[in-house]
Image (tube, rainbow, N blue to C red; front, side, top):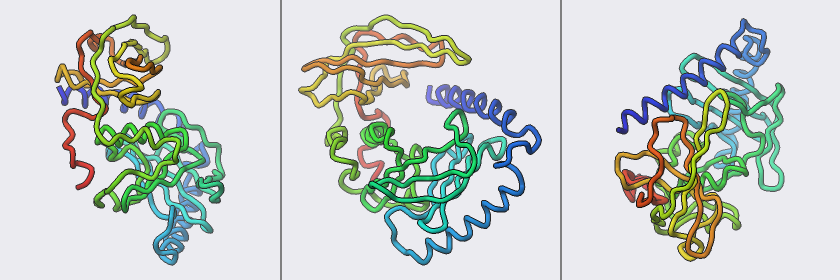
Length: 288
């Protein structure tokens, strides 16, 4: 079943990648993919590497990576004086590139791209990034994605999902990430488990890629520590690889929504068991 899930993911990735590659590589009309931009990006990256070498240990400067090694390979190099270089590469080559100055203000790294920057499909980068420490690791996370980051930590699978300083994937983690105070309650000391008590109606949104949404009621709420935006993963049945995002929370129950890209995905059923922790992840997997 895991192989089926991976195949479906690769199909979606390939569709997005092909669509964007066709759009982005129409000759060299897009200046940021042109050889001139490539040369300038290379020079700027060299300056960044030199500055980072002189800075030594720094709160956020360095080279970062996000991706799966397949269709998503996002790199970001940045330093206070030399600015930043961002590139997105995939199965079909270079999808996007940008560079420019960078500043640090109000606790955020702020990028000022030279070229238009659109976060859509396989292109674009968040222009504001929050430095997050987790033990000796250093992450850069868009402020709007901090809850998603906490969900990933709770799930046991953070690798490749957020910009992580290169080489830090080998470092052990300890304690909890230093997210802002308002997000601390999203980081769980122990997983929360729940069962589906009501399987609501499902609806399909029209579009180039249909998305079917199914609402369910869970028997866990504020008392158990559930918060809006938390992610729950199906742990039983063990052949279902899906997750739901909490929408509303009551004292001892909550509503959550499953979203699917495939019509043949089974609809949620009463009795399904869910957890904030992925069932196949070892408890110590993130400390290795």
